[in-house]
Image (cartoon, rainbow, N blue to C red; front, side):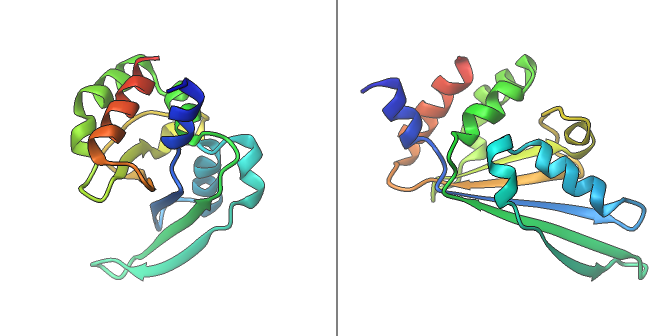
Length: 151
């Protein structure tokens, strides 16, 4: 199997992006952070939805979401190239924990780092990515992702 076909097969069919914004955060800056983790040629198609919720103490909390479909570029290739080496190694070693039985890949990125144009794995207060893959078994997805992370 050629590398190109493997990469095409390992491209997500759908990416759901969500991020929580607290009352003290600027929504425009959070949208910018999300756009910074998306390939340039895909940014024009991004449409955000914003849901306003109320926190435990009555403070406003916003959930900002967007869904990416029919991507022209391999999003994973773009993301993996942007990650620092230590994050790639950590993800490589823990990839099994990031994929559920339906072959959804979950990655959490640092919101603050994304705002300044960097991609870093972070669990607390993250930009959440859920990537869906079609016609790919879980073990094959893991193998393909591990190969991509080693590059």
